[in-house]
Image 1 (tube, rainbow, N blue to C red):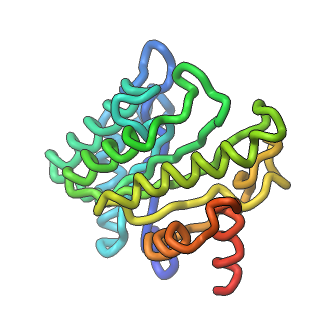
Image 2 (cartoon, rainbow, N blue to C red; image 1 turned 180 degrees about the vertical axis):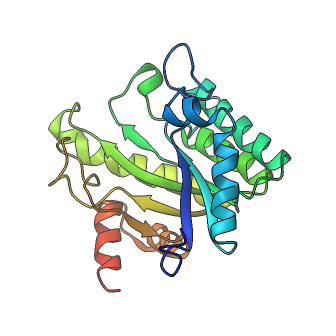
Image 3 (cartoon, helix red, strand yellow; image 1 turned 180 degrees about the horizontal axis):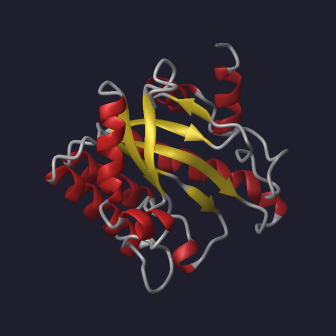
Length: 227
């Protein structure tokens, strides 16, 4: 952070540290940092990052944590409890990212959480004093019938974003690119090597003004291309 302090004002200090296997869902994964530094490595990393740049906004980012009491309840709860414990210890953490890699045809724990689940998760994270962003949103539709793909994708983006916007703690959306040109996944509008951030004010404008018969993301791309 000292090397890039002049361009990095917001940083994901720790990324996907929670386990997602049957034996460790919602608890710290025994990754290389856990093995070499110990279970307090996340706390240490945030403190080191804050020492390097006291003005930086420091975030924790993870996947399958988007919905409270949703398809991945154990991991979503583990995400909340991890952040709550860091705050209780006085760790300098300012916000978090919920990734939102969705599959429109998903079932079981791979199904898309409902908008209410997402809203409730953002709400309880906000009650901790954290800002919350949707950090890597995309929606895969290749397993659906071709005539349903754009309809389902449009509805999921719309409903999840509208729900998130009802929470004061929500501060923006990172789209995982605009096309699937560089992705291993196909028939995906927003998955590539490019990440684009859309702030809350722009999202509110798009929700209010875009034609619901057209893709929300298409309007997002057109609006952002003017800046």
